[in-house]
Amino acid sequence: MYVAEIGGAEVGVVLTGVGPKQAAFAAPKAIEAEHEALRFCVSSGLAGALRPEYKIGQILAARSVLSEKPHSEAPDRVVESSAPLVSFADELGATVTANFYTAGHVVCQADEKRHLAHMAEAVEMESFEVLRAAALRSIPAVAIRAVSDVADEDFPLDLNRVIDDEGRVSFPRVMGQVAQYPRSIPGLIKLGRRSRRAAESLAQFLDRYVAFVAERARNLEAQATATAS
Image (tube, rainbow, N blue to C red; front, side):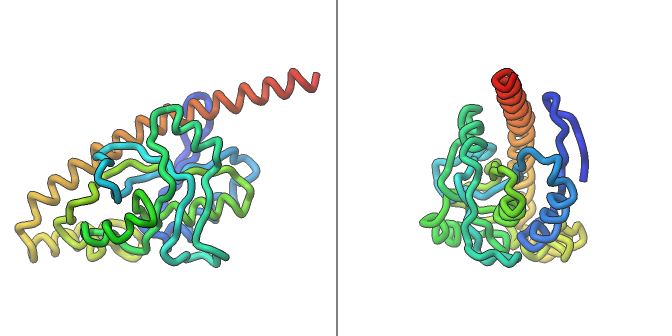
């Protein structure tokens, strides 16, 4: 966990690792430890587009998140984002979507993306578990992601083969896959550049978003104090 200050607000950042299993382990621990101080929670990261109109680096905010198979003991497979937090993302230029789909594996093929498109607008791997952990503590939360791969393209490799048990990309596994499939190198370079562009877009948006929400919260507190007095 890392702590920083953005727009006058103290922000804690938890790196869960890739996948719902890792998110189901890390998010509840972090939220439980800090729940008395938390004002809101953002599940952020990269996502795969399930609609052809979404472009690399585009910021998406989901009204709800669907789960393929909850790793926590969830009573259902849908969790809602906070409506005000979604509205704030909309005000700052994010594209509001109906649903994200939290998958249990990296969705690498365009055919699978087309299959998922009837359920959601983007696919990722952690938001359901993060939002559910926040909901259990009645903490407003929202899923905000940047598009890192488009709907109609396959990945150059099966990335599920390069993620270790801790939810991290294993460099030796990547090299092993590259040695086995050397023609994947140009595609991997392209994917890396796109992912970096998406990450930069997300970081810039989150800087503005956190400052915006913090300012709104301060204004509401000031109004409440004035009314009470």
